[in-house]
Image (cartoon, rainbow, N blue to C red; front, side):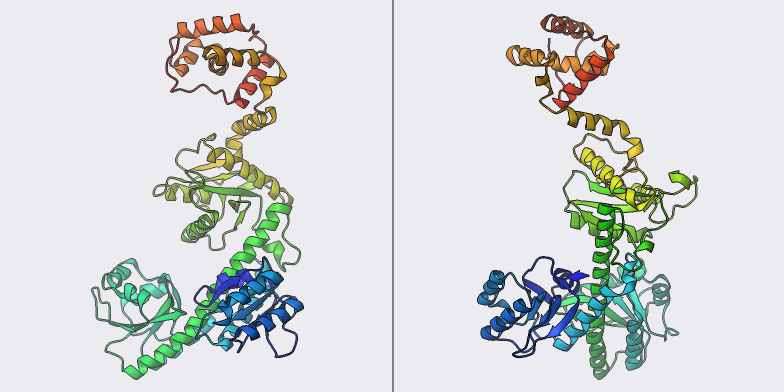
Length: 545
């Protein structure tokens, strides 16, 4: 299921805008408001067609709230009326959503029904299943017939979404564009330098571009926009200027294309939210939700590792921004259906463990997308440009019910890394639990001991009081001595003092509090207490007598 918030954010501000939110109200259908009748049912999004005045909006809001509707869609001025907003907040009823002016209600019904049906279809049980694009090819053929020229339909990132059947009179750049599903870099550079993309982003006017270098033929470019937002463009390879009436007909095709691009974008956004929702359930409960058809096939073959992604310094980027970043990285490196979800303020992913029984794949063999070895390669590549990126992974989960345990381990490693208590693996920026188990054991013991452990008894209470009263460094000296037990030279170097100074401190320390450091259990207990008290010797500590 999807929520009102999902729908609004997926279709974008060029079409819809939330005026009064209503939590996580789920939507399963769209309903038109009938005068004097019940306004919708539970889970329906009510469309206030023809409602423009305050009185009508308040009446419809009351009926929608009484029916338990999920949301109410209105146009201005009713959508922005302060009394309508106050009434919606008081009723704690349906969300109030504003539909942008000059938008056809028929188009909105088509878009909303398509997205809702897509979210409810069985195919959405597989995480990240893409939506259909067949209608775009038909529209590309229609545009080609209008201007008698080969056409491509591209999104705002210059990715080819569809192309017409007539590509026999194109140039090498167009052939490369269709084969690679993306405009070649050198061709992009040419059009960018010509100011084409700047004009596409700012204006709805068609653009004529003359012939360019390397055999680039002239082009007619028609922006595809909705609600002022640039969604993509139609590119036609033409040998001469196109008559104005044909350009106007192409503009009509662009208007229809805008609706399809909005729907495809919304379906992709819904698919991502459904995927993330299913993955959250898997990470929390160890199984995908029963209500998702086909859910058993959502995860690749195991075992798996749960990965927590981060950046240094920790918290510099919000989790939503990290999600967008890592989705982009995953797609760029060939993982087209990444298993990513934000949960409890962190970004998690699920990758499969290559090799039998969780062993790494053979050296020199290219790692499949979405595996641990693939992630190691991706981090090596991306950290060359952004050294702050890193990932930490829990132990392998050999069945879905072990996913929550692997997630908890990844979150634990993330906390240690973010706090600077766990060093990243040099080069790759990937830390596995098996590589950091000792740090985790110590941190768990430190947390269990607690910072007030010195109050339990033992020598640390007296040493702490002596340090506070006389300004002595006995606690720090003892910590260094325990860390370098049996090697006074190393302990002295760590404190940056002379070895004789270290020996003098130890003698004075034992005069203040008798200690039997020959006992392994006593040494362990003292070191855990000192760590819990954050008494860790610093290498930058200035020499003291």
